[in-house]
Image (cartoon, rainbow, N blue to C red; front, side):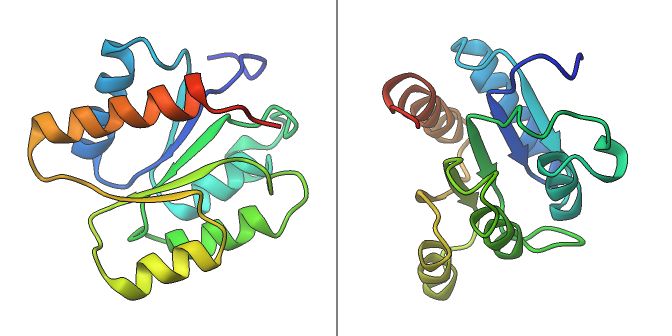
Length: 146
């Protein structure tokens, strides 16, 4: 994929099955033209800030939405969120936490750090697809972004 193509979604998900389901849902409903997947928090930050294996990528070509899991290898999802919100280049990107954690402390901390939404992943396949579809409709089609 070309670095010049606009990215609709940065999907930060370490579980390959959940990532595949999300990508399939976006494709099925034609909600996203380009999805970039980061398999851990470090890779997500490298992508956003054009460093590591993403050095040379235009960092001003920001995703329209970040779907962020919390329980990630290398850099935790909450630390990724903190980094996104603390940098002027990425501060306004909508970030939706999509995780299995129902822990009240994770929900509260996610919102304290500036998450736009916190959604617990449904275990059921069809419900998961519906959640991803609704996320895409709202954040990519209905929501006005700066």
